Length: 128
Length: 128
Image (spheres, chains in turn brown, orange):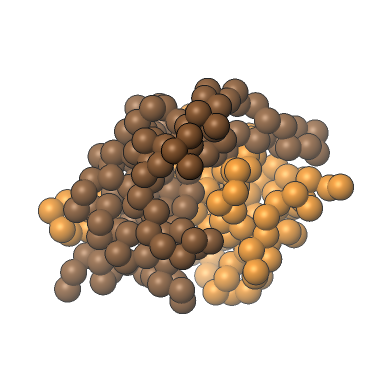
């Protein structure tokens, strides 16, 4: 049996994928993978997700250059998730130009943006 | 508008919730929250999830005592996830008696258990 068969894919054939920065420990992104995305991630050692909105494989960094090089892959006990330890190329994981997608923090009943924009998205995605 | 209204609940009214150990940075669990779970989490400062299998609120640690005290709550840009920075009481997040639910690592095409069982689940859940 393949290691891919042991992954508890949900009804849509997906699993949640958490990417954590290998050096800082910061959680960068949460996205989704289907079987093809996970297989390609392991084969190429670069994070590949399944874009639910675009309904196609999303090779992280394909437009921005902000590739996630995968150092380690873990599977959890039963909550249907994989954990990727990654080296975040460019130091920017979020399409808003921030280090992490988790840049809003709850403070006194409000979501407050706590992280700076490191690079203008217009400069990141200028190929568009 | 309430901060709860700004959360991008999915079609089932849920959001993925990643719990990260505040001191070690280790990702402990990935679970789900509905609106009631997130509201109670913030109000009580202890992680409350929605159990999809049991279809009820799951107050983390209600049987095991392994409560997650929430220090900080973050929301991501668009991938439908919250990130909890927690103090893991007992140092055990997983129902298997391990520190983290991500105790299996992919090595040469196999999921290898890398983490020790810190406490026998039979001792953790002896009230059952």
